[in-house]
Length: 346
Image (cartoon, rainbow, N blue to C red):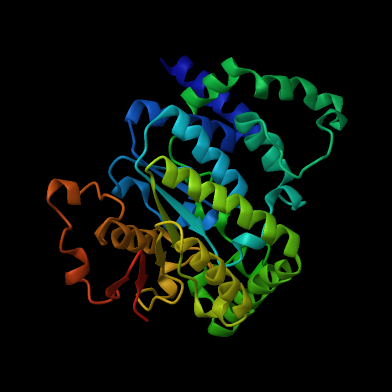
């Protein structure tokens, strides 16, 4: 038995060393849609990965990944629809999402090579020839694309993205800012937090120049929503809360263009929007950095999503618990409904 455990540990280490932890994890989650018979899918970028606690939801699986853009959220959803009949798709977005194309980001091409291309066979706007990779990786590539190898990985992988090795802070925290390498975000003074928030928001502000990307993403998103509506699947758009240190610098133009486009879609389709960006129900302790939620913050968001009418189904609420969670929790804002949109009162 000890020998088997050691062998298993070595196998997992090999997968991690090949930098295919995310591929193994995603393969596992996709297989779980068949096994678990889940009817709710969550997709999106790191905000929805960090911001929704899957274990608190009933029949829901989270396929979000860091930097997952609209295009790959769309393709993942199409793949899951082929596997299982789903009723709802929660799409984690930011106001800047329409300006972001992962396949054009030099920092995320490794994710296309190692995760999305093996899973979805599409590299979007990433045109580099895969054959230019060094010979030392060719054997590894063949293994990655081999279906039996991917099946093997999906069996040995964990269904939890965060673990002792791949912590929430390491996976989603903005560690490029040196102050967070050796310090907990909430141990920093307000001036240091503001510096981190400004740098982070400035990174996103640079996306405003990519008008062609915005136009392309709006077209993709419209196809995405039309596909869901056409298949009687309810789309729920979720905008996650951020700290005041980040909001202070992020340009208002992102929100203006976002809602201008979303409101145009609302003329033709029924879209539920949960916008927590300006929610007063969160404090610094609910974040691991300027714009990513901690587990405590994710639990709050998950309770909100499961407590709203027509929202995600709570695992415990379905058993008769937590049904009065929002009413009893004064720190969470009240809900207001306006037609097809569901937003928080400021």
